[in-house]
Length: 276
Ligand code: SAM
Image (cartoon, rainbow, N blue to C red; front, top):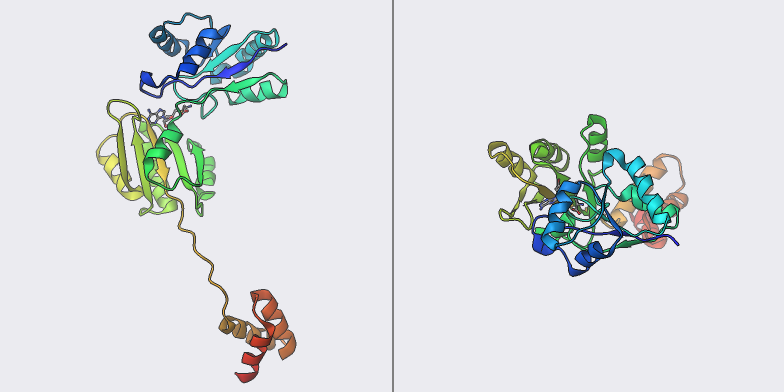
């Protein structure tokens, strides 16, 4: 019987955020697959855990992933951890989970620290409906396509960004979504210099151009105001009737068509058209 792949979230800054269950899982599995074993060994030392480790990072996902799958199929259990946060969220792991799913290898996700959820919760932006956009692409064409797809997005949008790309990203977002669009910049969450800045895209772009950004950032951007479609009135119906008549329709047919298109009462529209 295949062993289980455990997805174990690790702190995004504050070591106290490792949960009891996460630590217990790290202590119980046969081996730990880590994005960077040097980072993970520090956490294990903090927890007093000694465990065999394997490397699993983006650049060797195919080969090292296969080695992990083989061990799981041989019945070993594995905890997957990344440098910080929840594995498989903008992190190595997504592909490994998909491969486990395809091979019917059990996967168990332990809940825990995740930068996007922490940022959304503290943002003050609407949380009812949101979309996680990860990192914007560096490639110009893909970046433009991604930004264009968000022009009318009404849900709250969450982005990850590295400090050295922050200003360019804020400028591009301000250009596409508008300089006045509210944004919450969540910097160094759970760390000593945690900072939550609630402002607009335009102001943030200017601020960070003048004050070099440092640390890790999550951007939480308010969705577009949804424009309520106005209910068509009988006057709108009359305008359409006149237009249809100019195109050659009889009064009766023009009224029938206009009433149907605009969802109006045919009788009321007919009476108005006759009186006008
Ligand atoms: N899997 C991780 C998670 O669950 O959030 C995300 C990994 S992704 C490679 C790294 C990005 O997450 C950073 O560039 C930053 O945007 C965000 N991030 C991670 N830790 C953060 C923190 N303490 N404060 C703000 N942003 C953070």
